[in-house]
Image: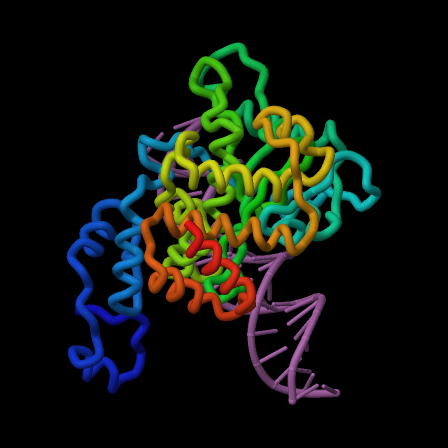
Length: 323
DNA sequence: GTACTGAACTCCGCGGAACA
DNA sequence: TGTTCCGCGGAGTTCAGTAC
């Protein structure tokens, strides 16, 4: 039997009459695959979570998912920041939103050489143990998947992610997927652009958000991200393809993404807000289908996002009914 | 003007890796 | 083996927008 977050004396006395049966499968999952217990509030939540966690975690062998936080610390590194718009912009959580890097104008910039030297020094510190004569390479040279590290389970959305173009720096309120890793001899790309864009689409979907809302309070730490169950991208799966293509059209809206567009072969992009809503609703519907959720379960997930408009929820359900 | 809510900022402590 | 540094996580504080 289980019941979470009970502080009332009477409720604790009547524990058995108000608690629910915590499924043994969920118990095994929490104990063997996760770093903390999955907290849930009843039968349907348990059923949904068990369906979602049938897929490999991002820190499992199936994925090659390498995260990093704190590229530039807003307090410790503030001596590097300026407001004269020279060099690379410093992105913080508040400057991006789901599928967009133009949500707000950056407040700080870092001179290109100052910033890249700083990051190359840190990277050199990481790879020097391999004793290889290799020039350090840094993440800001490439497109990278980012997400807000500071959030809340009761916010409009908890996981807010996009892909940022090269030549931008990140404040510590943004965590990111390393686009390049050092394997001991050379730098390799652990995930393709297609996989990265697909993951971005999954991150911004309601089912994945639903998981995090049952696990975090305010800090979306790296361990919670790495314990997300995400299916491996399958280019032959039409649902995966839909999420990848829609995400591409939502993210790559400026010339900063021309190289990425050419690389993944998606030239179209969408800036009209109504069209963007439709594409996002389709991504949510496809994600729910991938996780094998039924209409009742998707409706329940949507009902827990109380600040999201009813119109967008209905759009998502309509798209789901078409699959 | 005040209260409330959502969201971001800042500070501090912990733990592991590196190093003397 | 002790010390230092740095990445990371947690929590309190502050700010901004909105409703009344």
